[in-house]
Amino acid sequence: MSSASQWYVARGSQSVGPMSFEQLIAQLPGAGGLEAFVYGPGLAEWTKARHVGAIVQAMSGQAGPPRPPGAPRQADEIDYEIFGSEMQYVEVTLDPNEMVIAEAGAMMYMDPDIKMEAVFGDPSKQGGGFWGKVVSAGKRALTGESLFMTTFTNAGGGRAKVAFASPYPGKVIPMHLDQLGGELICQKDAFLCGARGIQIGIAFQKKIGVGLFGGEGFIMQRLTGDGIALVHAGGTMMERTLRPGEMLKLDTGCLVAVVPSVKYDIQFVGGIKNTLFGGEGLFFATLTGPGRVWCQSIPFSRLAGRIVAAAPGLGSGGKGEGSVLGGLGRMLSGD
Image (cartoon, rainbow, N blue to C red; front, side, top):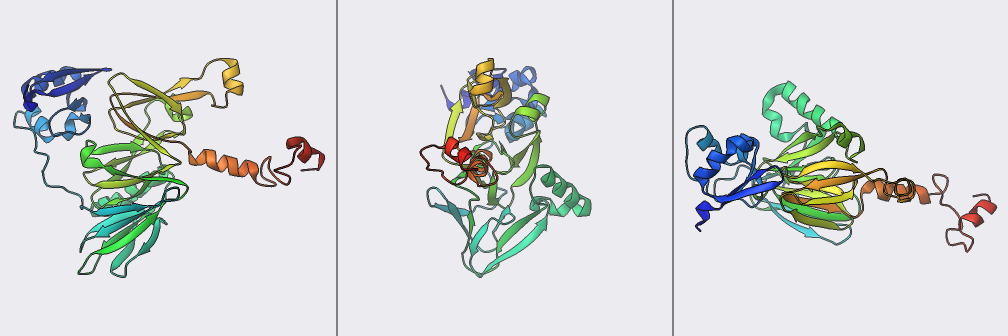
């Protein structure tokens, strides 16, 4: 079978295919139109049909072959190298006039030719006038981030470097958005830095239960574009590709990122003993494929909770941490 006939479309929890491009176009209206997820030649991941130029043209009556993988990129093509193991940093090398955007306070060091500038709101929205900047900054405030982002531009005539450090122990993960369908949903503080051309928006959780008990609240970050974004995860990172209909249960704080084709929901742990003594809270997060997911072994909230619990005067920790009597010894000693 030729690659031109290897198209698939997701219908509910199942994938339909393989089929030709013409058959795919005929199937799409009943599968959700341009909001349906498709997979085929030139795509590295299940992708919404609206992100595939050839499908958009065909649905509008201007049918054409699938867009070639080598289509011109909109974002800067930055080079990067990740250093370290538990406490990592990423060094980005920029050609003249190339730019990288980053969260405020993430910079570690930079060459003299790098020009740093604080930008109000999303740097990709700076052409929309004052109110456009206000709206983009307001969206960042909703995700708990600073109203400002920082841009780093190579203003010299040769290559220059700038580095960004992870905020707590974990891993820096490169996400090539052009290979992920042009969109990625991640936890609110995951984005570290990325190429100019990436847009940092917000993704609302439509289900009230997910927003209240899903660990990430109603709002997550949405990264869109065709460049490289570098995100941060706590502890060790796990990446997994879910098949259509395949479900993965995880702690609500362990989710780092998902592609839009993955459905995110919550499920009650169940059982009084499990709820009271299981140590996992009231709910699991459930992820249903198809698509890729990224999970972290140590959410920052869990790490911070352990530190607070062990700090004298703040939690249950204090003097005599290595005492034979443990908690009883601390109680008898007045701690």
